[in-house]
Length: 175
Length: 167
Length: 197
Image 1 (cartoon, each protein chain N blue to C red):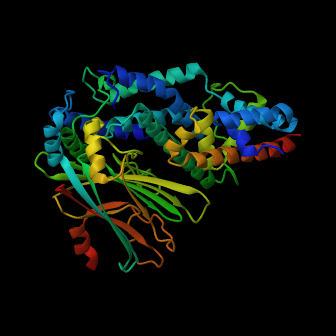
Image 2 (image 1 turned 180 degrees about the horizontal axis):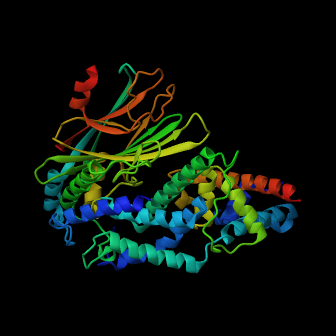
Image 3 (image 1 turned 90 degrees about the vertical axis):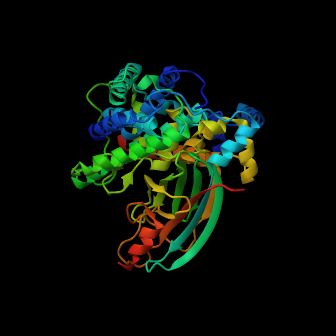
């Protein structure tokens, strides 16, 4: 790291700065707060063990986000496989309930949008999660996912269009 | 979950790591100061990495081949990006030169592969290492090797060798 | 004529440069359809980001993970996780450390009978049996030395290219590549010797 501070302070600061972003990304992909917690812990352990430094703090953060994203999607896929194997669902995976406590601040419209988000394919879900929960701009998202900024722009837009299609579908059923 | 297994492994690691001089402390090797030292440092630490990528059919017949040579320093990756129609591979080749001039070669692979079954993309990552002598060739198979002779399976391999850099 | 929906999407994200931003704003001042569209996109974005975990929950988890990290890594050392310097040791020491990382990984793997989940030591295997090791870096992994601009300049000279050391290869188009086994790193001598099998 080119961060010139001494001792553990800079690392602790970095941890504190980045933790909530990472947890949110993990949670919104896995929809399981316990899994999200494990994944964030795993990401920092890997961060600790990897043998290289980063040219900047931003790069370190992008790396961590990428690790969290991949671990989260892998977790999610494993869960889906388990559910399908147990023949619990026929098509799309059901929402995996978080642990009992009321973790989110939600309204009805928010819930509908969340459920639609879960149904998006991975590549569209990733960009929206990074945009809306990690608060990254297009350039930063491009760096995390290793795609061009133009590509990010297109994906975000298409993700939103798909979300709208899904939401409209839901509204029709509800009524 | 993974945590328990990882914990024990890390305990072993941390116990072993105290044997490494300099890890528990935070000092770094003195860097080059001034152009003379810089040149000397480079001469001592620069490495040429030779990479030959090839694709072979199941009967090991080589159908495609390309070569590249890059210069790096110990600890700095040469990143190989292989792009295909349904697969993207990032292979980071990182040579570490030890004090006794032997080399530890680390190959990190990330693969994004379109699976035929679903329309999704699978992601795999791996990290492999091998101690090598200067000039000794090694082969990295980022997608693995098909052990039985199926039709239409192409194997990608990267042949890598590292030598100290000479201008 | 109305504005392209993708441009409106970028506008809502604040990703348009000043020039385009002005144009869009001038347009939506007069065009109700586009104004409604922008407001719809903004609502979508707001509904998404509204579903945040409670800050107390995040804090609690953050502290819990911090405590666990401190306990897991460098146990018994008064330094703990947090006092680790946020940079790496010099390459020589790191090479030695890496050997130990892999040594300890191998020691551990031999000592364990893989459980049903297939998770053993390091690297960690997923259900398909492919090993998942550590992540790679995007940009060039830099030793502390290459932060020195002089080294970088000399590098660029040697490489005739700026930035990270990259080899870009396009794979042949006709072939369908799939993952068909555990990635391997072998000595060429061993590989060629064993081919007769």
